[in-house]
Image 1 (cartoon, one colour):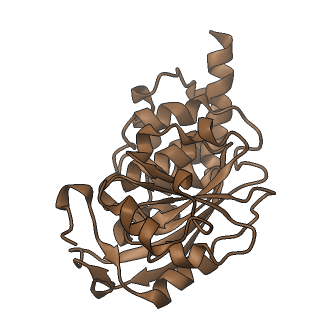
Image 2 (tube, rainbow, N blue to C red):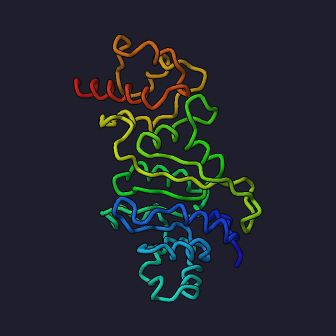
Length: 266
């Protein structure tokens, strides 16, 4: 089957790697058995997900040629037709469809990988677990630690609410057609208690909208971009003197706490 470049199609061709991805999907996860696979393609990963006991698997596919391929490969008793959802996963309102929660899994199309991660952050009350294939660069950004060259907005937003794990790297030759970059599988699991110690997160919502502060620029010179009037007198000098890429989650938690106080006083 000819791949559609505009859909970011790079079909996984390795049974061994598909099995490794499925092995990292926990079912049930926090009492939830619903798993949504994004971009099942011809069913390489799907076949191993279906082997997980008690899984309630749904698949979302944008290419209208592929549902019939999946129906031919998997009997109705194994993957019912009503669980093959055709359309754009970003427009499907999955949190409303599965209000009791779900896990998000897949060999994710690279052209929507960042949007899927932001969806996980935005709907973290419903999405308890995410396991999937990303461009290695994106995976490294998600899992980066303070001080890293790739530590940034995605790192902070996701690590504040999820435990993140870089599972393994996948070489280009395992896909058809091979992508131009290496890939990696990561796992996100929702924290029982967020890293903000229960602090409301208007500052994090603002951080999601604003670009990450420029590198090599002290935080004291960056905060004017945000919709909060930070008072230098209440910010620890140890934070003000740092650059944004050096701030730990604890530092961002302190910023979030002060931002909430400032907003409340308006």
